[in-house]
Every structure is written in C-alpha cells, then in structure tokens.
Length: 204
Image (cartoon, rainbow, N blue to C red; front, side, top):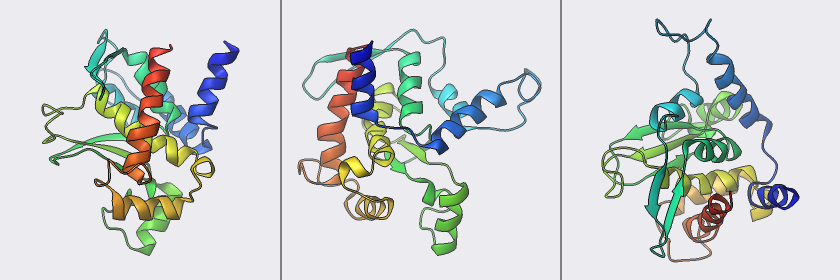
C-alpha cells in the first residue's frame, strides 16, 4: 500500500484545491434534493463523466501503442479523472481530442477579461473529437486516458518546469503537432506521461 501511494504521488503529484471542489460539487449534486428521476437542478463535471462512463459498464479494453492489451473499469477511470483535475467532458465534431484549461471556459479564443474570468471561475474541459478515427463517434476509455496526460501536467506544473501561462502558450502553438518530438508538449504528454498512466492502471 505504501508503494502504491508513492507511485500515485510520483505520477499525479498533489491535487489542486479546485479539483477537490469540482469533485465535491459533483457529489453534492447527486443528493436526492438536487437530482432525482424527475429533475436535475444543476450539471457538474461529474455528470459529464457519468454520462460517458456509466457505472454499469463492467470493463473497457484497448491496445496501447505497443499493441499490448489494456483493460480497466469505470471506478479506475473515475479515480484517474479526479486525480487529473476533475474536468468537464465534452463532445465536439472535431477530428482529434484535446484539453482546454479553465482559462478557455468562456471562449475558444478568449480575450483578457474572458481569460481572467475563466481562471477565477472556469472549469477545465476534456474535449472528445467525435470525428476522430479512433472515436467511433463517442468517447472511449483510451481517449480519456490519453487526454488525462495533459491534466497531469496542469496539476504538476513545477515538476515539468512550466507555469500555467507557459504551458497554455505551448498548447496553443504546439497542440496537435510534434507527437514524435520528445521535447514537445504532445511528445511529453503522450510519449512519457500517458505510458506511465497505463502502467498505473495495470498496477491496480
């Protein structure tokens, strides 16, 4: 157990207070007074997770980039989701998946005021591209795992020698390119962090 906790800390670092607040708000929203079969008073990031990864699904499976089988369940995906910022999940007719930090909560091309409001009150998003060749028109566990690698970076900026400003700027200029460059944002997240997440999943 001690080694498991150390592995978690090495990979995910210390969670931000904001991610705890988003997780708690989701749990609060599920109380019968707020959500029941007749109405749902307010939507939270947890609602968006549950819609795409319901509890009654026994397991998800896929092959990693080395053609090795990966299998996990909803409980593990939930654990990963909350450890990487508890973002809202969203579907868009894009050809690729992407991560949007909270500064982009109110606009895909925010001005200074929108960025400030997003920083203070916004929620980060994981956007699933429904036209992605891998998606089959819906979110898959492998997509959540892949995009969660970006969440790891945002939750551990110092570990990766970044600030929020520098990381956001690199995501704007490098996002979607440089997957084969180990020094690029996509290279680091998908070439280094994502395989560690898969190792973590296999070790549970």
